[in-house]
Length: 331
Image 1 (tube, rainbow, N blue to C red):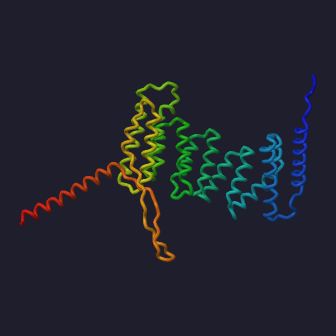
Image 2 (cartoon, rainbow, N blue to C red):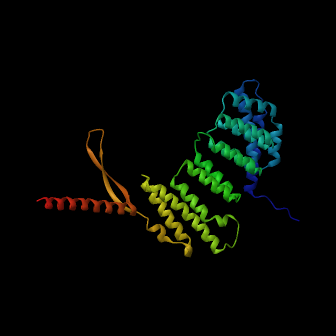
């Protein structure tokens, strides 16, 4: 049997890998003579980068494990632990977690994540990483508990990131009631139009989340009714809101959703609520010289506002007519 020959390109790649490995091996052979933290920190990072090269670039799992075994774990943990205690940084926590994860030390990873979040409880990326870690282990209850802890924080740098991930997690688990409850909790915190639209779209596709290949027409109609109910609630909220552009965008999304329902949809339900777009100008006084310039903007006139304006004009005209009539009677 003829053994297939390696191509020049493959030979070149192997040669390059061997050269990189040799450089790493020579570098880690120089153990820092001093006990100063800065030298050892660099030395440990060198080992970790070596391990990451084997794991990610060469995809050699056995070599990766060997590298971590050769690393002085006690010294590495001491250096990284001291670094976290004295000058914590995201990069240090992540490197420490990467190292313990490669060694399959799950409990150590959890403890490091806990210290990470004690130091930076507002860090949504850290919360997300911790939840993803538990999800990768199929620890669904742990992941859910982490999400709950995360969204209960008094301050978060990117709360929308966590809420979306939590909702997507429950959808992937086909937990429809949990998902609905999460949307309601989110609306208690923010009534942004994107949340309303996302909630409505979820309700419209809730039958698909159940994994049924053939959904009865009545079931689909029920989903559509629930989606419309969400839009109706949003419409009521925005009716008394000053956010006209958001209200208009929400109604346009409603129209598009109805169109997507095909024969079961009713575009006229939402289309009759769409506003007229009016081009207007507003005066802006320049601070530099007090001069006035005009800026164009788009205003929105909704049907209910039009009716109110007509009624207001009718009342004004009626009042004028009464005044004129009384004037002539008094003559």
